[in-house]
Length: 183
Image (cartoon, rainbow, N blue to C red; front, side, top):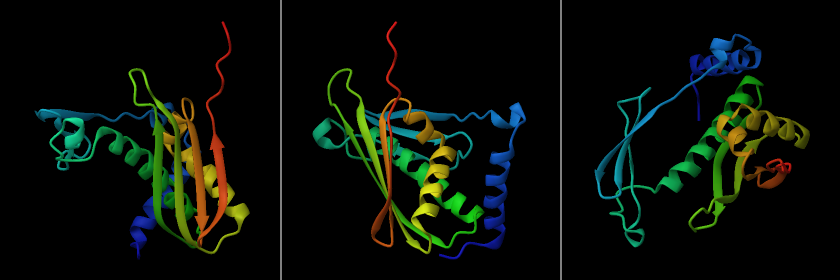
């Protein structure tokens, strides 16, 4: 997969800018998604920053939906996985690593009950290329730190990142929420 030189430079500069940012205005971010009820459990969502694109959200028939699109849980896991994968790719480009990211398989385990929540989320990242385990460990730490979604989720749910390099597991990082102290 060839990436245009101009896009590579934009990615490199974006990583450098985030690492060196100190201006409070540049550190602050905001994003809004508008969700429109279409029919029953079917929704259309638009990111206000990219309004020309929409996603359809629904539930499968067996959960009372019309099966018009992925469920909210699927989008939640997709967002978490795509964000982390983006940051793996961005950081590896910025650091000049010769890696090709193939996929991220995201599995969320949750309790399906009133008041239930995710118990754990595991992301298996598959990559090919030339890098040592030490380099992959540092890359994983940095990609996680750059991922807003990952950094938010580790505060409330057990997050595991597993990196498979050339078919071999080389990194397994587990982040668990801090145990709340008693009052």
